[in-house]
Image (tube, rainbow, N blue to C red; front, side, top):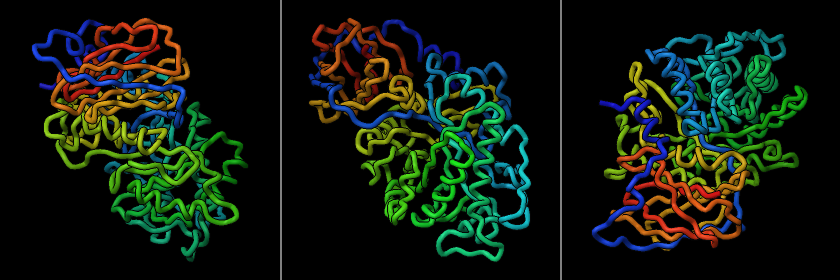
Length: 480
């Protein structure tokens, strides 16, 4: 039987003593040294998060039987720093459909106005496939970053006259339509979506206009290369400026990290490179993982990734290193931040009624079932907050993988992933920062624990402390 949210929540927040980190051992564990140096800094953190696009927001809002009380608990679990993971980024889909059948996302201009220069016929239902009320609830819990992302322009703006099955935006380089050039009309369309949100009290921070532009999907999508994306970015930037919106442009949500890297040359070319108008370069992890920095001076986000291959696996942190297991996703997050220098990491779906691993949390009627992937991401999101800086950290043990972040309030979050079959006795030293507390707070996720608060560990005046990291586990050490 799946655990209820209340029991899982208790596991994640109870500050009782736990013997998993410190206790009697019949056999000595191998020793390892971990050193954090806060004087060496890297990228700024924007946070972790997920999407609830394609009507998954309605799952959170009770479409399939989730009670109001459990809706509130789920929202806390996703977006509250105090009560849950504190996800900092929500990716909303900007709809391009003229109906809401199946899981389609409604367009704010469902039918063509007749031509690119005709007066648009915008419409706003105050719901946006459930995403608007979800965004209200998330921002009420402290969400700082709302990313509006269009999978496609409406079909009548595209070369194939269809929101699905690929097609290009009419007017970008090499793509012409009998109806005319729709680039300005599409820019106006996106900006109007943002205005509808902001006129009703929800701040949108980032705006994107493509999703996996290398893939002609049977669902909403639009093709583009880097040069064509650059054509539109210049138009969109001028439109945002004219509207006086405080809004960062993103591009291009390539289907894989390598695919996004291949688009960079087009974004950087010419006397007016489109890259300068971007705030974030976004890429996905499906075709290729984020294991290296993209060739850009802008921030980067891993803006979508998930295990789309297996049945939902709620209780497995480590078994056979399967694609949906928690340890695998802890490493995915860590590698993206450490090796690829990303500032943000987004799973595909946060919570949904599904039988697969496409979501972090499964909803079964009125029951909430978090996966170990969710708890692994929470170990980063809850403690490495927006505005933090990644800092240098090293480990003497090859199977102890590490990352560290210094928050704006001075707290330091160090994640230690033990991918070995044995526990390690760790000596961890913090250099370059004066610690103001005499204790360290450890949090553990493994097969038996979900973000469990362990007994505090004493820290010396030199910033050094000792702890035991269990086999096949993720421990976050929070120092202040």
